[in-house]
Length: 586
Image (cartoon, rainbow, N blue to C red; front, side):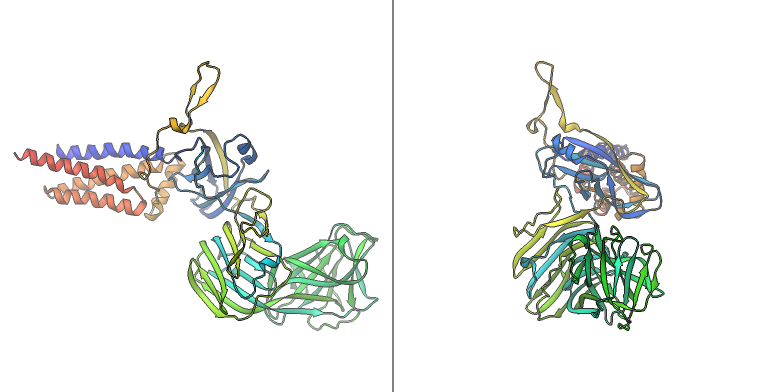
């Protein structure tokens, strides 16, 4: 009979605590709740940035969220905060999915409204172009600086990934081998600067031209100069790109692109410099090609590019295309060109950096350049010079190097000169007060086509109860003072992934719309009851019986995050049984 009382007591507590935990996952002061569903139609997917449609302006205008986005939070079914970015204008919202099992569904909840800041995990999810900050005197690094970024660093796959880059001077990037590399460079150029006054090509429409070349050392190129001039009034952009080559002519997609409005090129022939959208690394001894085009020009309005009427540059030659770069033909003379950039003067490498949330800091102080990852010094080297002062812009989080960014900061000479984080605007205000505002691009597409997100419902949750007014013609929203306080510190966030097979169980239950928290609390209590029953079959001593149940419960508290307070009712049952035995002994 006593054993039955213990089992029934534990079952009763599991039934009470299980659903109570699910209800308590609601943000205490939230007024509205949206159900978000993530669906995976293929194999297990990890680290996915996925969009969903929600009208941000309507939510703000309707006072569902405030304009500062402080009363909003996204949580999974276990109550853990999830990263997200509100969509600006017509852009979709973006959320982060750490992992979703094959052909499965995950459910999330968005909480909005109320007067209390929820502390939701907002982050900037950059587009391919990342964000740029215009060159400014206050951001010239000199010989004393500190640059810090925080967010998700992808050290696995991708091309031309840039964490932060000041073309021709400084770059940090992941090299896809679980490494983060920081480089300070010294200036270098690749050039052929001879031309003939009567030798020029007319660049317009489908008529593209190019020049092959070979770097003599590893080089990061950030700008290109041609000798050219405008004829009449060509429209659109004049573009210059760098390509890999095959058979001595350009091939594949461009490695980097630069463009200016064709109308801004002078009608007098002269040197014209084009800055690339990002520094591109060119390897020593490999043949590359320039390609220049003016797609909107015509036979009367075009750009003339000058050349030497002989093959004077021994490491390359000109080439041409009459079908917008689909096919190319190598020539026998050379264009005037100068590729400018830098070759590494100091290279710092942090190894063993697995893709994930990291903070990166690079510091030049007292003649030493140091690279820190998550506050740990990974590498350092002597560097007594100043960082090159050039007119190139800062580029941050380009080409998938950082799926999301919390913040970026630049400090020069011990003074904060630039600081940026996400905001609901076309530009990110420089929080340092120096006016170095950033121009961001935003992710609008999923990183995994098989993973989709949809808003299933958006309704008032139970904290937004209302009562009818005296005249029965309107409703009166209950204020915060009318709503009872939610207990704090009593409910934990689950981490079923710490238990082998635990995440799969939670995913399966979520797919059935069954709250995983209900299962785990019931599992812990019923398991403790079963263990105590088994042990009591071997001994009638209370201590080992009680210890077995407590050990089981403590294990799950420590492993998957079941709240430690649940030990209290277990102790109550044990104490009650002890008292019962003592009374029975009289």
